[in-house]
Image (cartoon, rainbow, N blue to C red):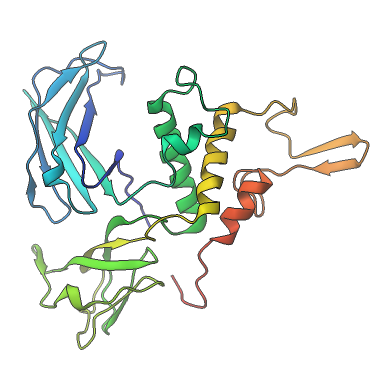
Length: 294
């Protein structure tokens, strides 16, 4: 399944700055002139945003702010940025219920204490990458997140979702042949489900191919303490680098006092980061299907 990745993540309940960077024909930062923006939520409802501000070395950055009062739900927002000659870009931004670690967590008892060597923006970028890596490895999210997808109707009351740990269904639609229309069911009655099954009691999901469009919130309330520590260690490992002197492409070392030693290598077997202390925690929280096909 194709997974659409959002450009940025923002905590719900606070002001959220949505950013677009203009570029020239070579993809380099460039001033694109006056820009307007229209923001909608996952259902397509307009979300009020502030005026577009300009910044950047080449005046290439455009920013609009979603006020906290308009950012109260875990959702995915779509921003359409328009210039003098038409649409410049469409970006997507996830409003999330939390993060796996704070910047304060990263700086405590690690080598990341220096704000000069490790500025906040760099740590946040690394955190997003590590969170995505963990989500992919574990096939679940450890904070509340939003997801929408198009599925084929099952013809019964159960609709298997891509994401596990369903919290609530926000909206559900069907394809009429010309447009998406709301289904005649009360989505609030669909119970939370750890296996990611949308069970519409006393209702049948219309049978068809790619005829159901559904938006839902999923994920845990918060990451457990050991996973939070693993996230911090993974970020620390990424930023401090490998000082072992072993070539990064090596998967084994020969001629040591212990003979031939096979190295922990990301992507091989159970290894995700190749740091045993981190990967042991990640493997502990991996999602198992328990016989349910996906």
